[in-house]
Length: 478
View 1: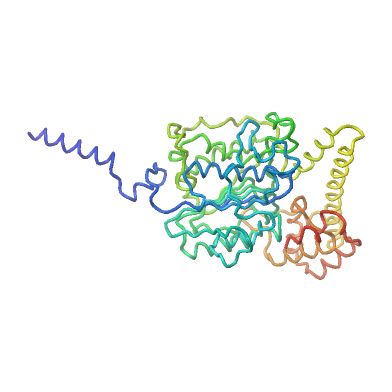
View 2 (view 1 turned 90 degrees about the vertical axis):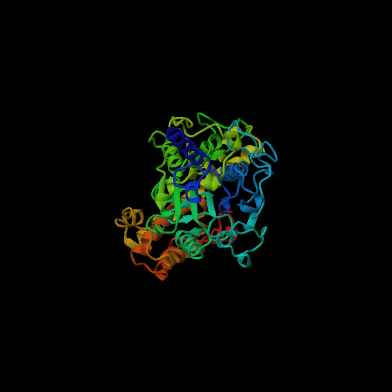
């Protein structure tokens, strides 16, 4: 009788352990999340560029939306920023369709148009994060209306530079402003944890030495604070887009995390496991054509499952994540984010019929881009020479601070010098963001805006008002 009672007791205990879990066990770090009734998932997706040559950024965001939608998130909890000038663009060989992979399906269908065109601004982005409807200018009016038990996922993809991220309209996103917004969000007590995936050149500089480790925020970036990120599925790649496409379809870091999420049961994969997969694939065999994925903030959050933030596709229920079953990480050709527009215009020129108007137009656009790059590079080099002398100028402008320090001490000074430069020399544009470290170093050297203005006026004697890179057309970056 004693043995029988003991057997029943053990069986009852086993059944209870199998079917009944305490709330603390449901969302334990690294454990399988079987109950999504605790809190709400929120997501903000941002493509910070415009122009068909930047096709990949909006394709990335559309793909991310499809992952979240299949994962069970509702449209009311997904907020999308994208210029929306790609799908119906005259250059798009498949009108109304956007792909993020050479063999991929349309990712554009169903994507909410919350903030499009000139509504895609840093100010609206901050207002959405803070739940500030009154601060919005245009758009759907959707903001994050989260509570203390909710989980937030933010994904941004575009061009960047030391301390900045691009936006197609208005001033750029500056690292100090973004981190201040994240601190305010934390102080409001309106989330349990927040994950930020960031694709841009020098994206590590957005959080390096700035993001505290006690805000319940976990961030990963496509590159460290000193290097470019990379486009992929580009013309000429080993895995190239269909021949009718003259542009890159995706970005390497972004494709890595999304194609990993596409194939796994995200209840069984942690943030840390995905970080390792993405880090390996984005390094691209430690070749020149890759970057170093970084992580910042409260690193212990990486033990949580992706399911908490992305949901999971029921079709993947039988595809448990295990080491080694992820996508291939073999090296292949990539394109530096900053050179993707050159690649686009070169392919347009190369494919156009000889002696045709298309050939002439493609040549004009290519020459215009190259000329603008030379103007920016030469102007900043000359400003450095005037401020510090011809021998010291290059050293000062290219100086890289030790790891763990922000790119600049006085962010207002950085904005002031950028504004001064653009007043006399025209817009920096997506390419010119690479020189943000130079402006930061000028500030760190104690140069004031007045002296910077004098040097800039000497260098840029004629304001470039008649080209698309003029600050009159594109607005100021600060």
